[in-house]
Length: 96
Image 1 (cartoon, rainbow, N blue to C red):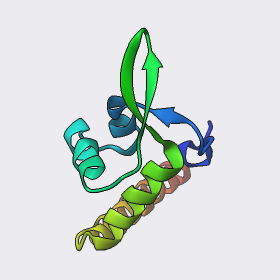
Image 2: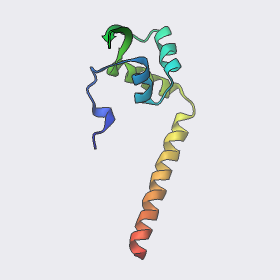
Image 3: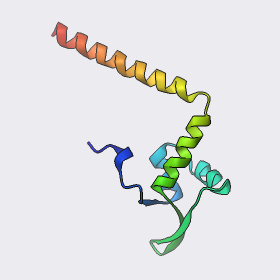
Image 4: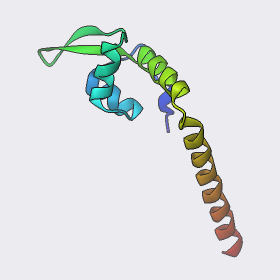
């Protein structure tokens, strides 16, 4: 499986693609653009659309995560969930 965080940082994404890539809404990406995130124009399927470089998008996302007071708790919760799943898996293998 390819880790999505090691993809090409120069890839250009539309609002929808960007939102899906980082797990935010399209409106959030529009909000970031209004606050200064650098975007460009591109032609996709004959339509002119706004696009953002993947590297720029991730930089904005990381900066927002640093400012999010609940992010450390989310990380701890995810680590605890993974450890619990691994523990259950080990118990299952031992009992089988």
